[in-house]
Image (cartoon, rainbow, N blue to C red; front, side):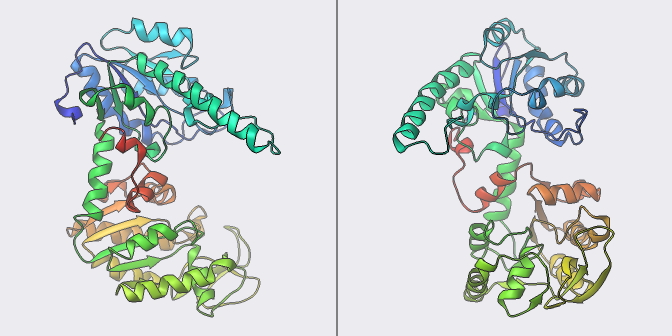
Length: 418
């Protein structure tokens, strides 16, 4: 398998799958360009070699062509970041795109319109009636698969080489993230620098992680993290369960949680995970106290109580000081750290303290030689909010892709190149 470092892109047209799915405000201004900046080393390497770029990405979850999700809104910013006047094709597989791709000269860049404007990108039929029969569904699926092949072939025809640098979509078997790779031989499909860094970071944690290994898992639902928790129980020394999941575990153990978020149908699952942790000799760590509020608001009345004694009408929105001490002591004594999910509703300024304490403890451990990987949307938003992203070992650009990789699943976007 080729690596981007030793490949010479001189006079080559490279189709680069990037992840420019960036957040926009109501005036279409980019509010966080992390994903664009993360791809720059790959893009600049290709241009500096004397190659040209055809950039493919999605933006949002459109159900067809939509001005709201048009990539024209990010065109100027991409041009500024690259230092090149980026061309734009208003239809990713239209005649304009084909002509502009064919005419590209070394050092030039073409940004294709949102790939997800076409159902073929995801390979799922659109517009099916809710009461469609099994036969109608079968016909629609067959039709989309046939048209997806044409869509993918068209994208592949633009370029001499395919580069996947979109780790955030690597868990999707979409046309531009996996299927397109089939149209390039082993010497003409490769990972970009960002993909390489992501895969190395995951390997560093899951295969080469030093003990004590601590994973901090937040999030609202146990059900959405069940597979990763079970995988981690085979690897870690300490598993800190935090965020909204806290209250499902607390209730399962007989605690009183007031109006706190809880999956009542997952209480048995929580108890089962506690037993599995015991079996694997993993220190599964739960909160001792909570910062509670009388409503879901930054301006709510607040107080600290034991996590299993939350009164009716109140809900836990962050961890309390006793829990902070417990968590941070474990984190500071760790050699490998994985953080996925904040400790509370960090979007509210009055409930950021626990997440900040965890972030600062990870920074301190990293300073003392630990390897720390932060991933998953909210954790990344946290670490960026606190201005600490450059003080941990690695901040992943992937949410679902990172979790599936840690679960041990084969990512289609990775397998297509490996």
